Length: 182
Ligand code: VGL
Ligand code: ZN
Image (cartoon, rainbow, N blue to C red):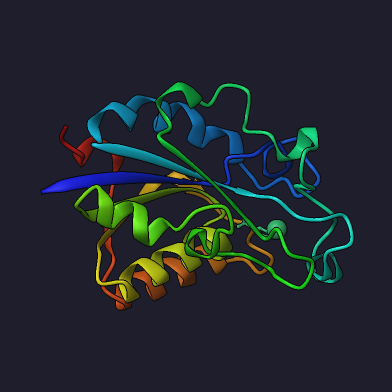
């Protein structure tokens, strides 16, 4: 069975020094680089907001389209990425899930490549990773979240645990990077 890796929002603004930095956001990068070659396809998403997005009523401005903050973390191995998705691109749209990308359809891409299993990693556990996992489950995909390749906003302590619980309850499998075979 074919499997793909979805790398959610490993962007400068979610990493230390960024506009919406999350604890240990950069720690996911070596873990992700190390596992990419075990997948048939690698897909990335990027938060890509217009400067006047309503999303910035809830969040400090971050990942404005085309800015350095919206770039991938410099150490992410982008050469292995087969499809780049951009989301949150409309000014009325939060775009938390990679399935809401506006430049291409993740669902169509997975169908074209006969991929039925999706592994999700990246930033952030309690928003875009969770939203992408829940949409993947709705699409009927076998869905796994890589628990040592994610990091959370944690506005409230424990939001990360709650998000993982919600994913698990929805049918997502929790795995560690070491358990993934090529
Ligand atoms: C995200 C908050 C706001 C995420 C995006 O990538 O999880 N979180 N925008
Ligand atoms: Zn955002």
